Length: 309
Image 1 (spheres, one colour):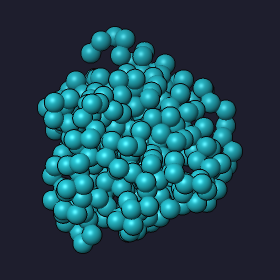
Image 2 (cartoon, helix red, strand yellow):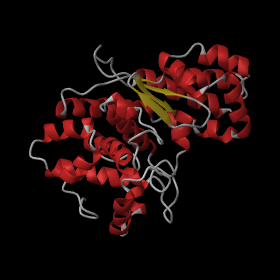
Image 3 (cartoon, rainbow, N blue to C red):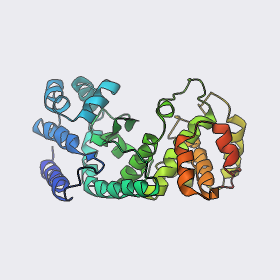
C-alpha cells in the first residue's frame, strides 16, 4: 500500500470535519461519517479487512442510514470482502472522491435551500454517504437517501467532474423524496408501471436536479442524444404505453452509440416543458411531484418530440 494513502485519507477526513460551520438543528442532514469509518477499518488492515472487522467495526458501528442500506441490500462484511478481492482498485480509486465531499455538502445545503424556497412544502430526509460493494449507486425511500461512495466514484460515464456528479445525482434523489410513496415504490412489472409513467417519475427527479443544483444527474445523455432528439422522442411516443421497459429504463448506461436509460432524458424534457409552459411555477412543481395520471400530465405539458429544450 502506498505510504501516501493514509496521509491523504487523514487529510481528507480532517477537511470533512473542519470545512463547514455547524448547521442549524433543522437543516437537512448530509452525513459522511460512514465513509470515514470504512476507510479507518480499511487502512488499519492495509486494504484487506476481514469480514469480521467490517461487520464489527464498520457495519455495526455505522449510522442508521448505513444500517438501513445494509438491510435492504443484504450488505455484509463477507460480501464487501468478496468485492474488494475482485475489484480492489474500486476501493483505492474511491478515495479521490473523499476529497470533494466537503464542497458537495456545501453545495447540497444550498440546493436544498433552493428547493425549500421554490417549494415550501418540500420534504427533506437525511443523505448518508457510505461505502458498499460497488453497487447500487444509491437507494432512496421516505426515510432517506443512501449513496455508495465507491459506486458513484466509479460511474465515470456520468459527469466527469466528481463534485458535480455527486451534487447532481443526490439532487435527483431529493426529487424522488417529494413524490408520493406509491410512486417511489412503483417497480417494473407493477400495475401502471408503463414506459411513460416511470419515465415521468425519473424525469421529475432529473428536472429537480437541474432546477435546484444546475444540471441533471444523467448529464451524459445531453451529448449522447444531440441531433437525434426527434428520432428518439418519436420512438418514445410509440412505446409510451408499454410495460416492457427494456428499451427505455434501467438498461444503462450504454454509450454514445447506444445510450441507455433514455426514459430519464425524455421524461425530463416532458417535465421541463410542463414547468416552462405553466404560469404558476409553484403549482407546476406541485403537479410535477404529485403527478399520478401520466397521460393527462403529458397532454397538459405542451411537449412535442424535439420541442422541449
